[in-house]
Picture: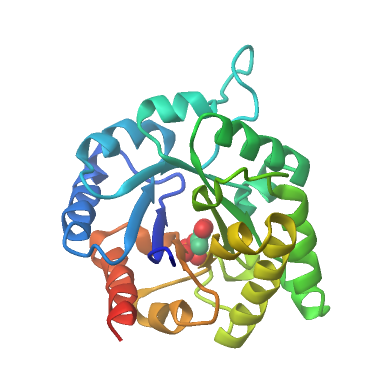
Length: 254
Ligand code: PEP
């Protein structure tokens, strides 16, 4: 059975306790919009507080360590975020890959650490503008993802989502065309089926991310193989985030 569309807000390094009102408003609306699975990834410092507010939405983290515990100053383990109330973790976001030099191998190690403690995963991938202009976007993304995903899912396909986020579309107001999104998502689906088999690879949700807003969400969410959206800037207020959730609800009803 196809999973519900998955709309996930990534608050990045935004938010203090004063933003809990937005999380509460999102949660209360999500209770009435059950055709869509809604989740928020606040900064580490708000995970527990958002978890306490949330009756319907999923709460997750934006990263975790590949290490179990020990002398890793400033790092936060998968078990720690789960203990704080996180049910999922975003891994391999381009801001981690580019800003913190995270390699595909490190991201794979993080996926395995997160799966081991029962978390769901959103594994991100995406090309630079230069790579797209060179006509190498699909090959680059497929190779990046192949090296970042966990080797085996062992029946955990419902716990894995992939987010395709072209780097040049993140926070820029530019989005990939619907045709390019669909082509990339089909290439990602082929990789998932090849890696995990028809059933497991066929059921992993593939999200699109990159300047998704209420006014473009319907077109992007309606593209072939798009199972939801990973949303940055537009997830920071309940009003704009819920506009995207509503677009997903409308598509379900169409
Ligand atoms: C993101 O960072 O995951 C993202 C998609 O950001 P934005 O929606 O702001 O482009």
